[in-house]
Length: 127
Length: 238
Image (cartoon, rainbow over all chains, first blue to last red; front, side, top):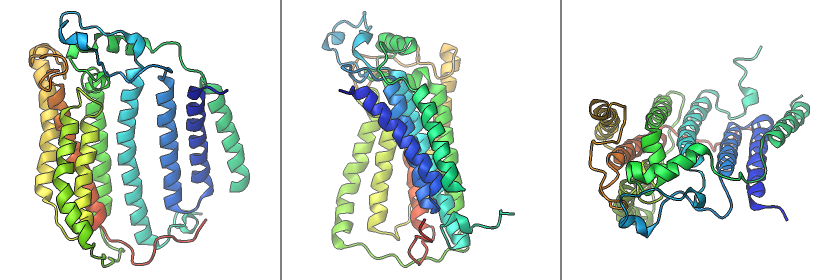
């Protein structure tokens, strides 16, 4: 029986490998870009897994006694997963969206100039 | 050559990942995460600790992140706006169902996005997610009517003013509490789990939501209105 955390981690590592395979083997620019997106998704999954502990919940504090006990507002950390990795991944996802949009914009421009998506035919920088 | 090199590189990368990744869950959360969870409510009164980390503890990083998003969107829009070499295809007009549905749904989706970024300190969500939802309502509107022109000036103003106010809020922190983006003693922290609580966090997240929403909306607009090639995209298949 493989434990769920190892399964998520393996999935993240596999996504990274598949993404790199797509970047190196595919010649179509859109497919290479999808490889980058898969690497990004795998990295996000991996980072989330580093802070995940089975049986714990997302770090959103939901304790009704805090409503009355304003003075002693400290939560018990034993029931939450790590908030730092989640904040990092939230940041990374937004950056990934921007980078993907930039890549797509360049693909559109390259298609406009070369009339092909095949990187093998972009010969202007070859020697 | 590629077919020989690729498996070698992949095997090496796989070996590195296999060595580097701990495949079992950690025994406990990191020390800094533990402190954030423990004192997050006492410091900021925000129920969502992730929001507390993003907007307060690592607020400066979030400002940098917003700048990175701004730069990449600016680059993408700049690249897409130059049109030479692109032949514009005549867009197929959308059906009556899509047009009516878009008009009906635009308001509620926009409102839902605003709800997400106004409640970022209480529930899962926040400025980035809410901004993305706001932009998706604009996407729906543009899908229904390709010729609809967005108010670029208004979008630009919202985008730059919210970014500017984010920095101003940080400067207020320097003036009053002595550190950039501080949340101590500027606004009353209020009660835990109230909408008007957590000091500056909801204000900053609303600003981030407006900024992200207007940036992504102008990105979508640039992508929709840049020239689409007349022939089917595909090139030579790999």
